Image (cartoon, rainbow, N blue to C red; front, side, top):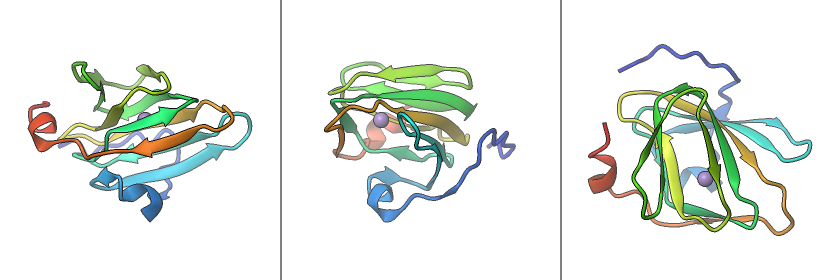
Length: 134
Ligand code: MN
């Protein structure tokens, strides 16, 4: 397991319950700006990932900054993520993102500012899916 962290942006505080209930494992949240579209730094401990979810109307952009992680859209193969990778998540696409089993992972989450944008949280990522990922 890699315990060396670059921590490019502040890690922030453990996720509040309003979000952590939709995550497996521990993640941390730091809002970086609230001007324009809000930008958050999200840090996942090894093995941590969020539930399947949908960003309605606005969508989301992930800018990977640290470690090794995964993104998967419903019906697609999981995509391995490294620092410098960009993931553009269109609105209405069911997906999840998080760390790999053996590495911390961090990404900036850019929320596309659209009136009426909302997140819909769904089921957790099955161990049968996550457990197969390296
Ligand atoms: Mn998302």
